[in-house]
Length: 483
Image 1 (spheres, rainbow, N blue to C red):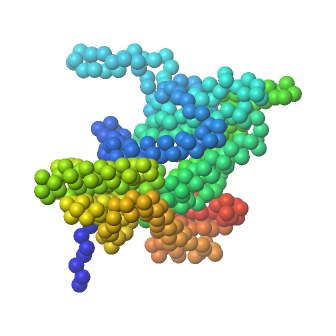
Image 2: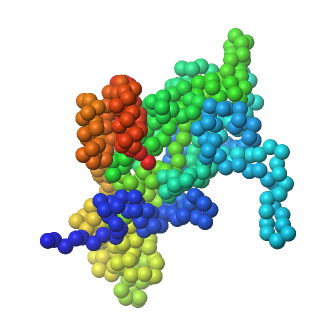
Image 3: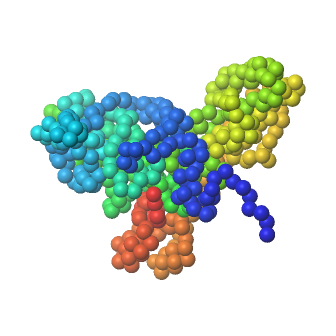
């Protein structure tokens, strides 16, 4: 019997995927649970990933004329109540502020005091408060289109939390656009979901299924909801971004009215769209392995880590100068580089870079310095990729190596989708598939979802309708388990 290979993460993915996921987060130092119920602390390395998501995607939406703004965290209850259909989907998740101060009671304990005449809701989403602003800002067709986005936090109480995937407070961007015609709003909603799909695939190296949500899964109050669905290594789906065509439903409740070219008053047609920190959870579950995190170079906080190997203190200054010259060569090519100068063993530094998913590791000691070389290792391949090369060769090819790693991770992720997406011809075959402990997603004819047998199977196997893929023109629906 062969000896089991030792891995940095225990348990492994195959042994306990949910526990493995949590252990990767700890090992890579991304986040931790806070003492505030259901909330998380995003640590610097995890937040650096989110900053890269922000910076890259922000440029993309601004190219479409979107402008950033900021709106209050506290939303008057009357705003929320004005959109009954919408809030019905969020009511049980809303956190409510009912008092405006604290005071000491007779036991010298701080208690809420000063009850508000009208409570405030901590934003679960900002359609209502942004709609109120738009009702003042939009008066004429000349004010349209209006495209507003904010990067912020939102609050939705969660009973069962999981870092990045489901927390009571999380970070996201929420875009809210207004148009003169229904055609423009639907085109915009589709445009934004397409931007999400391109961002997921080209930056996060996560292939996605892009399509429309069924009526059962549609955003409350929307006329249509478009989504990108990613497939995790355990076969479950992750809704990674959504875009909603709200028609005039929200503009009517917020009174977003404009005068058209003929002088007639019309309600604006609006859209909303968002991605959140759950994308980091998706990165973990798609790319990581039993040694820790793996990050696509496009999103990694640093793409190259350099580990100086100083065995003789007298050589430290010379080695550090040698390393600095290499850093400058990489930085000149817009490569994000980090030098690990921590007072720790070389072995621990190597494992730290592996667990944190740094795409490319470089090791430099006295031997490399004397020969004008360096040793580098790809995270996606591991020790089999260990290469000794001249500094000039490495610096000139580093961008190509990083591009190769990005492609490699995307191709691996495509294989995950292929291995976890099946077609079935009838509902008996669907039942047998899941009885045989199939864990992935299934594509079935859309007509099946109205069948009572399907509804029973969906309940029995915890299946939900993920989307009607655009590629199938509405004839098929992808179903399965999801996060």
